[in-house]
Structures are given as C-alpha cells and as structure tokens.
Length: 158
Image 1 (tube, rainbow, N blue to C red):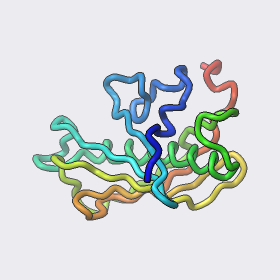
Image 2: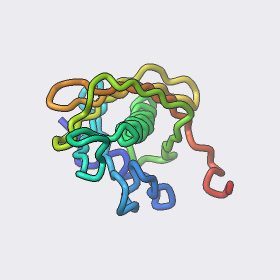
Image 3: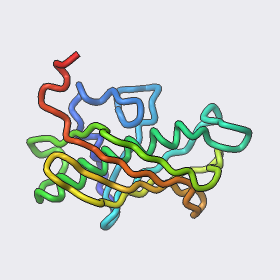
Image 4: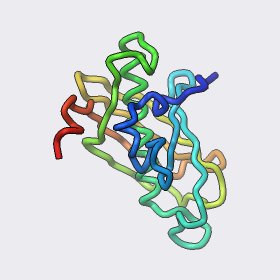
C-alpha cells in the first residue's frame, strides 16, 4: 500500500528543519506523507500539551498539520505528474502560499489523527490540495493548501 519512505525523508538536510515536517527538528511534528492510492496520507498523535480545552486539540496544531501535509502532498503530486519517484533530481520542495482551514467538529486530544490529501490542481509551480483531518473516522477539519515550488535561491535569501 505505501512506500517505506515518506516524501519528507528525501528533503535535503538544509530544508529539513520545518516545525511541521522537518526530520531534523526534534521539537517538531515530523509528519510523514505517503501515497495511498489517489490520496496522500499522514498520521499524527497529539501530545497532552497540544491542548485547547481539556480533551480537545488546539486549532493551531490542526492548521500546522494541514499546512505541512499540504506541502508534502504538493511534492508527491509533482513527482507523480512527471512520472518520477521522490528522491530523483531535480527535487521538489514546496512552501505555503495560502492556507484555509475550516474546523468542523472538536478534535479529540488522545487519539491518532489521519490526514488525507486530495489533489485539486497542478499549474506550473503551484499545487492546490484539499486536506482532511479525521479522528476515529470523523472528519474534524478540512483545509485548502496552495503550495508553490520553493525557489532555487530560497535558502540564500535572508
């Protein structure tokens, strides 16, 4: 069903510090995005400190999960559109241009969340996806992510 390596596992070291998906950020979420058929999938279990009110997840966490799964979905979709596997050159890495989140129901704190991504559009360097957050089979949030391919000189710009 899924590859053993997530798209984030192929990000170059200098681009692996992101709080949401960077493997080098020991304090971050370190989410991992994979293909599952025509959708992308990632899983995340909130910690007790991701609290909004007792028993429920802070909305900012949900937004950050949607954000980073959206950029991972953009990378996966771009590789697939070119008939390439993640890890082949040139690498695809995306940043968020727009993030819209709708909170549909309270998200429980103590269970694994599933993030699912659906590709809406690829147009040039822009990829649009819809990401859902599901807890115990119930969609609790839905987001739209507009991701743009990171410019080659992004790291040198400060």
